[in-house]
Length: 363
Image (tube, rainbow, N blue to C red; front, side, top):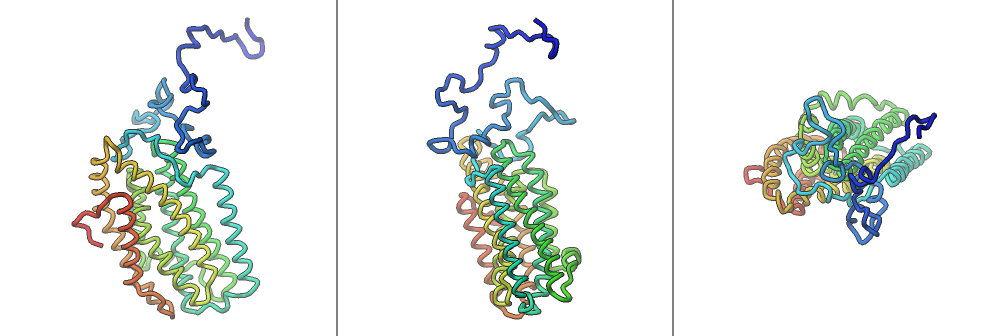
């Protein structure tokens, strides 16, 4: 019987109803995936299989395709392979509610610290050499953060094979973009609080200071890499410990306090905390790929090629930053010691993944 509002009625026959069986319809557990733990977490409930694929539930195949004929998502978008991309779970279990709570707390912490610093006029006690370092170098770090967030992690999260991987990479990108914004706003605040502070010096430093040429080249090359997994690996496993942590932890966070600055380390400390989380998902993801029973050895070979290609760029970038360590008045930490810490950190990450640095690559 036709419905005058909605049009002709649709009759579903028994044959139609039995054409496709919903996965898990015969299960009394009311779950269509295997949880990582004994019970599914909220993170898994709202994340797992939000984006299914033809190997899981899309019996009709992808509903859309690109102009080149590639449909939906393609395993050819990365050289590494997996016998089951859907096994991955973000160890941080981030989903929209937890992301909003964490980001809100982060912004609140920064605002409260800055408000207290302004009320106590602590900027007046900063050593002038350190003011110059923040003006030219600490502020410049917003540029690699923005480049990695917008041009590496945002594209990579679209190309990754499952929603679980997409989410983790997407959060990584949001962390980078928020930190870049934090530094930009902080730079504006310092321009108001410190007489003579040049709020635009970071632009010229990023573009014209030879100290930053290596970092800029490294970041720009990462943005041009066509392989999403290569981008994530080369950024979080190689660039971050050798350059990112080297500058954030071994320079800014080591030198700030002795020069009267307790504010800047708050921003950079948050960034280091976020890198720990982002490294955790990266380690879990690539550990699965390295240990894959079907493709593990081939994946190791591919990752070895990535190490041979990307490590020299990050090493060169790190070494070119050396003059920055000599600019503050108080020499808290020698560059050679800071770089040794960075190398040890990088090597420990590789060790945790069961990987070795190719013999021809020198740190």
